Length: 246
Image 1 (cartoon, rainbow, N blue to C red):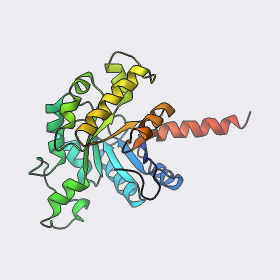
Image 2: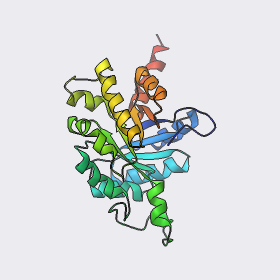
Image 3: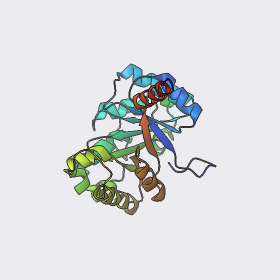
């Protein structure tokens, strides 16, 4: 994914922690491009995730799903529901990344199983379906563990992986720096991940709630960023409104 067509600006997404369909509609109305269902940390079940993916696409958002883990069923379920990409957390190394990516791609690129769902309009499959779906959907792996960081160049080179996602919070924790403070050392780590993605011809993206990270992402050509989540946005809105009363 690149700049929003006709605007030249970096696509911006938000995390959806809860099955709040109104948040998807509101986000689209105010100009967000992407919704990322947080199936790892949020409060979801298969039915609520299925509805949110369908609604998000219906209102014109690009829909990504951060799945609960690097396993076949959550990856396939999100893609079968129509997600445009899966973001896979807690990757350990290139072998782990290769196995996870295989679940996101049909043969011969991967081992994804085929099932009837909205992605084939609940009908049959054309001869072009498998290749078309492999191109349409993306498998993005998170670089947020010490092991993945150490192996990032080999991870980026895995053919079935379409992009790397920098997870600043967990990366800072696992690199021994505690809670992320956007230090110069963090920026050096992030730059190594960017360089690995570029060398492999892959896209990269990151969580960029801090203005410093937004500038970093813009300057170095991120595919997209995420900037907030539905719960944080509600808190900020309520706090801002309450402040008007005093």
